[in-house]
Length: 432
Image (cartoon, rainbow, N blue to C red):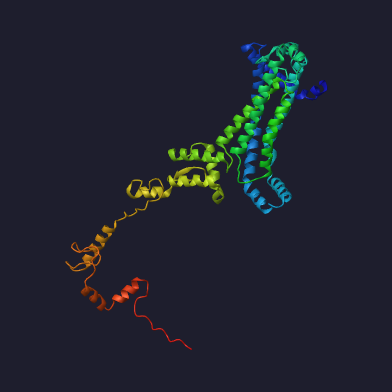
């Protein structure tokens, strides 16, 4: 153990120094030998490490966004080599190499904080074995051994024997209950974080090996935490539980404000952005302008949610610009300039006035009025019926004869039935 501790001395010494500095602050408030002082020191160590890893997290986001821009190319490769999985994987790796993207970038924060995890593990293990390590001297070692978190010593483990636990002034049952609860919480938070990423912030239209890898990690990491967690001291469990909670909150913030294109999170974000923009008539945040700018630059390559967003702006009389701003569309302004009032109803184009549908009696009376204007007064029209004539009355025989004597009556009736007007050409005799 001393050999391993000496190999990690370059990181165990700084980690132990940071814990001691935080312990001085919290010890003055809660007491130097309390679990609150040592537990909050570990939590503060986690927060400090994650703040230092924010640049790496930003790089991870940029790399993830670069992967998202390759989604159309990945889809083409899948369709082209859908029957050859090996060639498909080779073309995917070739695409990653040409564009300089790395599908394993999501693991960078975990890899970066791994040395701090091992350093904290060796510090707490040294406390359990009554060994000084780093800047932790004998007085600090005795104080750390007295610290209990919910009745479990800071250096106790789930696999410790009753004698080891009693040496730390605790009961085996309490230690196992506390460690089991913390292991379950640690594994559950890891699973929820990964599941949130897979269900809300992934473009499900494209199936890539990267997605399959993330789906596998969603089940592998919680199982690994549960298996190895029984050998972790309580202080290390506090460290990993705090790390998982930080990661979960950080990821929720990113998904809420900068979702992946084509994901469910983007649909919810664009719906919120649509309500905000249509209410205020403009985009106020820089991050919102960046997203609107990216949507405008896509043109015809927009996904379903982005097209709905652009159409919603158009219906509200707004238009997204190439710089990410949203202004009132010209069609809306032109419609208001005609009479000074918005006649479009918020659609950006003038509404067509649909004529009211008339009843049969209104159409007949209207036709009679039009025909009566062209004929002499008092002459009955063919479209209107006399008040004294019943509905099923037949025309007089004299009127029928007059209609038969009119030369163009047959032609007009034929023309109305779809035949050509005028005299018909005689058919030529068939040639035998």
